[in-house]
Image (cartoon, rainbow, N blue to C red):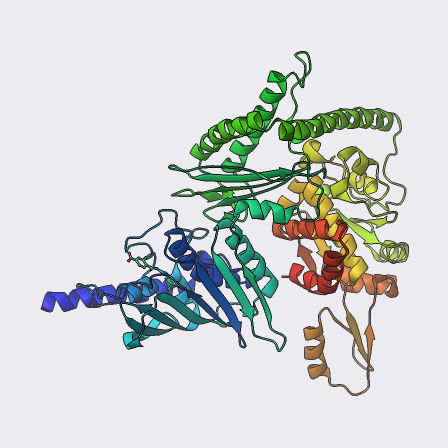
Length: 637
Ligand code: TSJ
């Protein structure tokens, strides 16, 4: 008996030490303590319910955000087991919630746990990083409840009533001493849950945001799974074949893929591992691309669509206009890359490749009309690529002869050392003029943008290259575009987009981000792209220096400090309203300015928004413009 108690204490101490470690270094467990990490808390809890759904015992998950940023997640699964562990005298439920990495120990494991996926964390981490948590479980005819504060048990599992239902409900408030903000972004959550519903066929996920008087809510359930996902992504596009191609295969590494081609010129391939969006791609994407190239080339040759003497179609020709979702399940995923969203498991390449080779070949043989429609597009892409290459060679030869090739509007800097040089891409001539006068010309170059906005999605590389708005950007950056982009040739270490904080400014930002994402992705991955942040307000008062405010909140704070007596407030509607000195002081001086480094996720978001913005449908476009102010704010996070 003595020994028994001793063991009990030792385990308890271990638990407390474990969760204390989580609170000491939260970033190591949840990725970051920014709003990204905050959202991760919700995903972590929801993933437990998704696992229950994958195991086949749950078909509904409800998420509610209450005033005060309290989150509730509820499912109709079996309920976390409540039986008491004979050795620890603690219920299975409490163990799951207090012991690091305790998930999945109780059988019923789907094998490909999404929970703990990205950062290898579990519900105990959420417990440790919450001010408080309440867990309610219905099973075995009863309702059970347990409570925690900052990871410490305040009430062990207690039976509080009877119930003939089953399910698990978790209600928690994230810890404001850990996270920089507790303010969830409804849209981010909504998008993630839509995505999860697409990835788990038949699972109903609802979200409700009750924080403001006007309640936002959405409900997602897709019987078509990935097919519905691709149809959703292609909603505003012209399709080359009526329904998505769907292929799947079970086994050690289950693979599920849906593909549909459109008349667009870009490729949209989304990849997931254990339901986590691998935005940096990886071995599964590699396998998919290789198989796609091989299958279409083989088909084209076997059916004499390309002749013996003709060269093979290239991968990029075959991916022009493709929309695809690739979802794989991997037991021990290795995540690499800048944001740990790149699959590293090398065995996955061959598995996906073999599966796509076989299934897609069969599909094309059985659907010759679809094969024909896609291959026509590939061949025309290949011809356009060839024509573009010739056009570029002409340009290059010309530029080798003429010595001055930089765009006329570019006011270059005197330094030629890329690491210390910056180029500001500025919308509008008047702002461009102020920027030229206000800059430090030793290391700051200014490129004013003018001309017609180009729809990147609806244009091929040759058109992009010759577009009057984008060509100067390409030449100024100096490293080419697309597969020929060479990061070692960039002329500036920082490429800074400077646009107004209004709808037009957001438009130009979105265009440029989409362009960089599509045609100079390494520039974003390498962290060379920035957004300048001009102030929104200037507060002037006699006897003190002018105070610039970059957000509404900052302005409120500053007004509290300064008081409202004898002040004038100027609201800047655009960069053009600032004189050169003001622009330098507030937005360009490295000592004082605020620069936001663009992350790959920001660019992806811009790219998705771009499709809506440039799509032919009026509805989504108006909606975008209405929600736009918010998007600009989100980018700042
Ligand atoms: F872990 C948690 F607290 F974060 C949490 C778990 C939160 C939420 C909202 C749901 C869940 C959860 C867990 N839902 N469903 C389950 N299922 C189990 O834990 C479970 C149930 C039965 C059996 C069994 O073998 O009988 C096994 C497991 C893992």
